Length: 343
Image 1: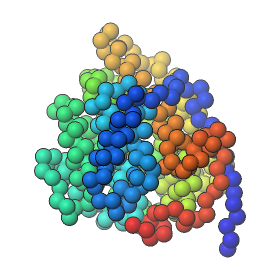
Image 2: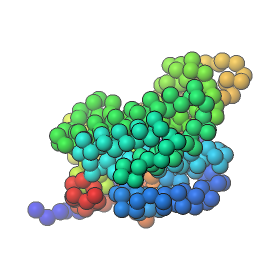
Image 3: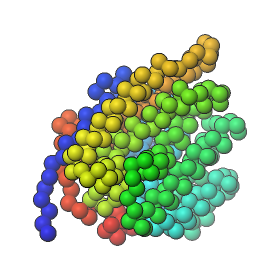
Image 4: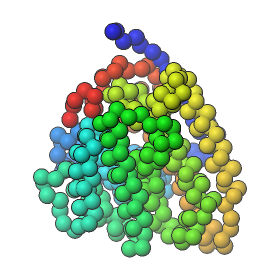
């Protein structure tokens, strides 16, 4: 059966988002430092290959989502994002048992952060251990358990996603979103913002901030699933909101894209409305809460911009895709990943 080219229209996103694109002035140095760091790891690992194929764009993402951060915080964010993306890309080719073995190796590095991971263990374990050493210097002992819990949620969700692939399982929307809120790893990434703000738990856990965090998480998820859908359908992946909506509601690709776009806009409005629900805790905490909210806004915008400015999803055509909102569907099994057997 021949493949017939099809053009899909991406939904508009963040047209009225109050936070503009901003780039941290330390980006150029960060990018070079990141390249030099990643070079030490096995270049044959699929996740490492994809990092270099994508031009080490994790540094760009860090610089876009943390436009005012100091050099140390920026580097920790960049290393974290590299860890997440290498874990995610490596896991794209693994069974649930293989994914669990990777997770176990990573957890060994967390348990023994000052001991170099054996060379016979997955590359990502040593890469993540080195990130964690830097993050430990940035954080206090009381802050670290929160990260380990959030990152543990991400790792567990990676295994769940692999098990779904093994079973050819397509979750319904609610089930999918519950897993996706962890595979996106946004809350763990934002922990780095939280370290410098040092907000008390009663503030972080206030319903108004919890809601804003949840809205921001879902906006990042939808952005990622929209821009990555073409690549993921070409490698046979169904861990994507567009694919889930198509399956659950028997929609075409375009109708599913439009459905997801409407959901995105609804969440944007909920986020903006939610700003009015944040109470006052006094001048000092209020100033830090304002920075927390600014961080969420920058993350949502920075991630959306990065999705088109980096080559990860659209190659060299990202800016054109962002302008026209149109993309030509790739043929099945045309992108490196599990479905074509490439490791």
